[in-house]
Length: 249
Ligand code: ADP
Ligand code: MG
Ligand code: MG
Image (tube, rainbow, N blue to C red; front, top):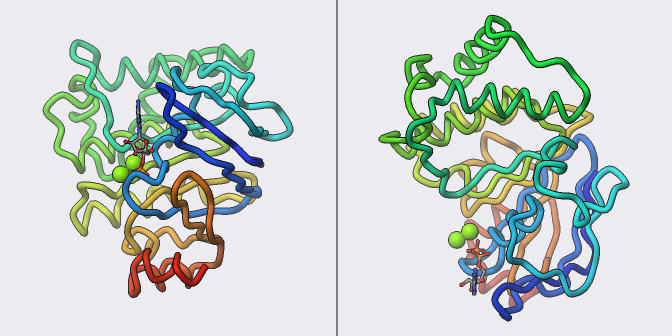
């Protein structure tokens, strides 16, 4: 589904991705782990099409198309979803308004009719239930005054409503307590575990991977993938730390 080949990316003249090569096949959850400052969030931003990055070498193909050539809204319409480490607040806009607008603009881009208010609310209720988020939360302004856990659950409700083909989730587990972690992890499984879908799951910790079991685990360090393995690699990292593993890589 996603093929990243020898990607080099810089921002403000600073080289951050440095020959990154990575493939995610349909049906796979591929976890990315790596030390602080390795370039994990940069990878997520580059895949989402955030402006400011210059790709000086390499390529990214999504379902056979040149992803780097697509505008952010085209990427979203093609079925890519980005979950952020720090979800933004949007004062004055309710979650319901925001989610309905996001869904209908993607439907429009695909040539589908917008969902009616009633059908949309039904869908929103179903996904909120999945994430154990009270519908009253969805009537509130986007992320304003939300706790860390509520933000992440609201973001996963958004993912459920948009039903993407591919999700890039950047530290979705950060700031979650044990119970919220389980709810969010199970939400990711329910929404994205599908033979036709793929997930790039960026995380520091094994605990999310206990719920969302990865097919592959890669270590990103200094802007490139230095090792790829199965779930046991995450376990080994948890026990030994990055330094030991990278020294033996
Ligand atoms: P990670 O998510 O793995 O912790 P990031 O992708 O956030 O790492 O950052 C990778 C490196 O790029 C860090 O050293 C960070 O300071 C640097 N960086 C990120 N954004 C910028 C920027 N706008 N200008 C200069 N350096 C940046
Ligand atoms: Mg970080
Ligand atoms: Mg980061």
